[in-house]
Image 1 (cartoon, one colour):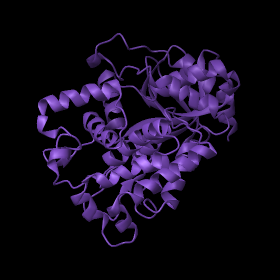
Image 2 (cartoon, one colour):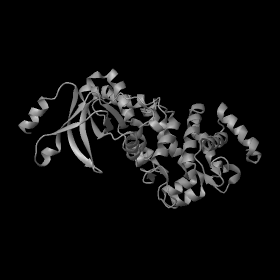
Image 3 (cartoon, rainbow, N blue to C red):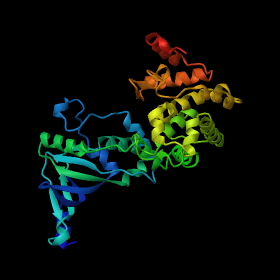
Image 4 (cartoon, rainbow, N blue to C red):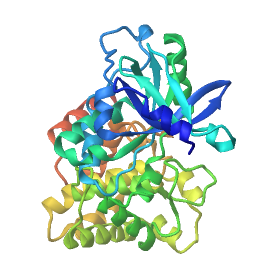
Length: 380
């Protein structure tokens, strides 16, 4: 670091923000990567465009429902949270980059000097910014920690809108299955992964990354469908779900008992049939059936706490074949195709409950009556 750099930095007055930075070039334009203390984030990113029409904004409006969830993530994991960089444009004032030296890499590292009257427009990360502000109210000690910020020099509203579009154009959320697979904070996710690794009906034939299964796949269920069905079975509604020893036992015993009452599942375990064949021919080889079994199973164990296994044997009475349109068309299928829609899930659950002599809820009764009114030939 040269003496000229130190000298120039020392002359900067207090009416500027001074950030360490790395200078780069993208598409012929300079941009700067810096680190910003968390306590400064709410202070410098003040620009509020929420009252402007969409065509005059450089960013989407805040979804306030997301902020508490992100803020809680920081507050609950102060030693283990991770945030990606905020991207922002600087407008309204000249920006100066002071390189650390005149040769090689020294010309790319240094400090960026931004007048305090400049405007900072967030191109990506406004929800992180709002969550940081909320989290600091509960944990002000986090204020001295830093988040990476990518600064662009603003060339007007049109350019800022294009930056937002480009940053989000190829953004793809990870699938629910892979999020469960990699989530070590959710004890329920680890529990479900253990079920998928140990129970015969799931072991080796669970799709761990995708939320859908191709026709030729050797997999039977997705990790996300097992998670969802088991959460329903145990009545787990919160995002982070702890599992008691009793609940662990119930979940394991339930899926084992279901397997013994669906002959094709046992054939799959013995490798006398392919999962692709089951998916082509049977409703029970799809996530909607697993989900419905979880919902019905929760009610079953609640109503028959001591002899639910006996009631579960009634699953043997079900003709699960997709060709059995009198039962499944309109319930698990629409025009011959499996449907995961909420109405189809409820109607499939209704059928399982009625087979196992489980009373329907008020909402389930309402939907069942409406379905039978439109399709009287489907009455049991």
